[in-house]
Length: 273
Image 1 (cartoon, rainbow, N blue to C red):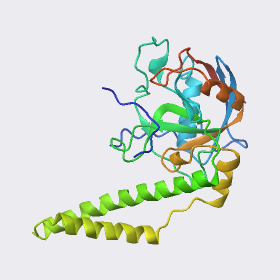
Image 2 (spheres, rainbow, N blue to C red; image 1 turned 135 degrees about the vertical axis):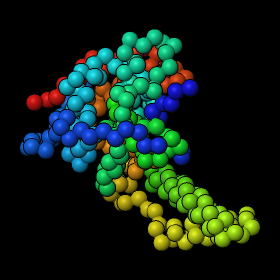
Image 3 (cartoon, rainbow, N blue to C red; image 1 turned 30 degrees about the vertical axis):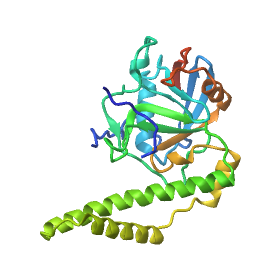
Image 4 (cartoon, helix red, strand yellow; image 1 turned 180 degrees about the vertical axis):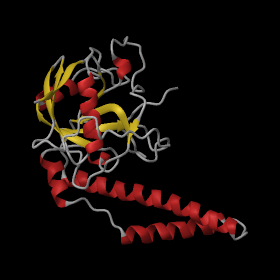
């Protein structure tokens, strides 16, 4: 079964791609903007200069006409709309979509301050289990629709995040303790090793507590978004016009595989001069 570029955070680098000559905007006064013409209306996105490899790769593919005719193959209301799989062009209804791409990935470009607020443009990727470097798909992207959160909802999110981070650190320390015991020629005392790893994990979290910034909380309360994706997927732009179209796409009827029952197509993309 082929891997899919999912957006999941319940949670082997591939070919690195250098896009430095693919159409950088470093010499331009204004950020690059791209017009996306879809079968349900027009969307305009602005690409961030803070994520140059993703920006330049997107520009390159747009100029090549790579996205013309591609479908929004994965749509989840109050979450996001996803496209970029070349296998979706003229795909039959029964075709399994989500695994296609240009044959390379892009190194993650996580930028402090960029969060998954409503309207951001981010890169899809393979799950952590096969992609520990969190490298992005070379072509698949998603636009966040998201939803607004209450203080209580964000408090719950913080608590869950702390739990996940603590468990991740615990697993790391558990492996270290097991390796140390083996090197010392000691018998593996599972209970003792688990206790020591847990103590180290708790101590680490006390020294590195997680708490969402107040400005980010306000953004998720007033604008909305998907905070559980922060720090896990590269954000490289945002919608400047056409969020009503994003909402329209997000509202379409979908199959059990989250594919729209009636195809939603990207007719063309072009760089706005």
